[in-house]
Length: 111
Length: 117
View 1 (cartoon, rainbow over the protein chains, first blue to last red):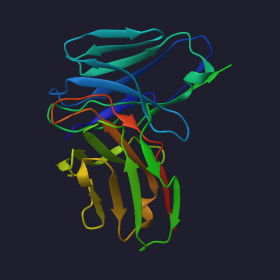
View 2 (view 1 turned 60 degrees about the horizontal axis):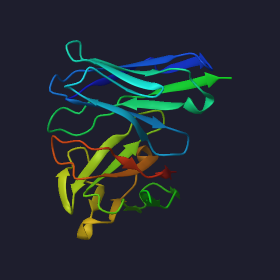
View 3 (view 1 turned 180 degrees about the vertical axis):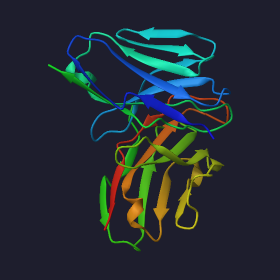
View 4 (view 1 turned 135 degrees about the vertical axis):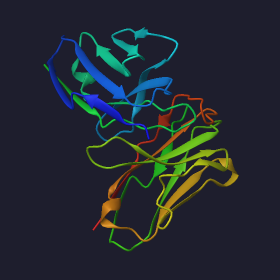
């Protein structure tokens, strides 16, 4: 089955700096790549997603880049703010199969 | 619009007891998911419904877990009997029609935190 890994598992940055989280997956049939943000005591919330026919997508301070050949995609957050502190999950469901989420990355933005 | 509703928010039971969780998805969402999230891990899909039919329940421990979605709206997830390792947050999510191979944004409820003593 699909194996999804995230690196790093924890990340601390100073407010205003950039943060990058990488997600690797094993199944080359994956064609949809979302990133979810989970704040304490809440359910995950989609923040950005990308499909396999696109290499990069940006939404204000958040961007995702995809390298299908190497089977990895990354979340980029610029000008980080304290409210960006949360756990971030990626997923890479192979076509016709269900969601397998990564183990999560805990991001702390220090004021 | 109203989000995904779940109840109860917290539940504490003893092992071997039974427990049920309820989920009300966003109106108009045909697809409903139940996930188990153990502390420090990513959500693990237990079962996916498309309207009132099961799309995938391959990771549902069917000897003790059951789920239903009568009339294609609300859903309940039941555990009977509970084990210590069932302690987790149970998340319900819904999305627009997402059959196999097509993916739409999943909207998650706040979850039910289950503690089994």
